[in-house]
Amino acid sequence: MKPYFTYTAFIVGMLLLFSCSSPQYFHDTSSFERQKDLQNARAGNVFGEILMGVSSVCVAAAFDGEVEYYPSEQQFKKLKLVNPTADTMYVNMLTDLYWDKENYCDFMDIRIPPLQECKVLVPMNANYNLYFSNTPQSDDDEMLEIFTTKIKRISLKPNMTILGENDN
Image 1 (cartoon, helix red, strand yellow):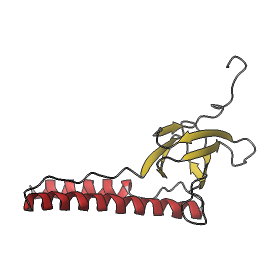
Image 2: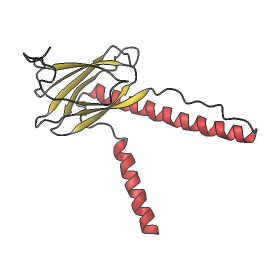
Image 3: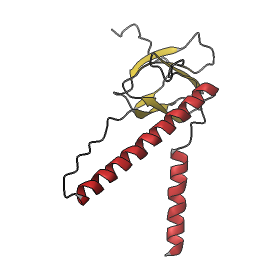
Image 4: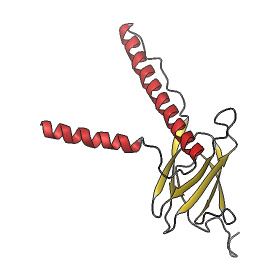
């Protein structure tokens, strides 16, 4: 029984470690730090929600009442950027939403290797202009406008935003 517990604890620990790690595809220092700040804020919100829920249940049980706790709205979500190509994809995400008093909640210089995906923690209800290309130069970038509440996954294919002659 003990080897199964050790093995299970190791697997669960590794899953938590890799699911909570900061994205290694961020090459801009301020974007990397902002992503870590968002993850810390999200972890604090989740911990606070759990604490409030448990204490609400305990108070309701102690005073023989009803549970009067309703969770708050989600503030952040994970957005999956997928690179289905054989080239590295260079991505910049720009928004008009402020993260602090001086800086926008932009994410610059995300480099997604071929056939990989990158999870980016973004604020809910935010509009982003997502610029991407398979070259580091900015003169051939394609742009997608996304609303973070409505999307979970984006597959970034070159020429996906260019309309052909037959398209309307």
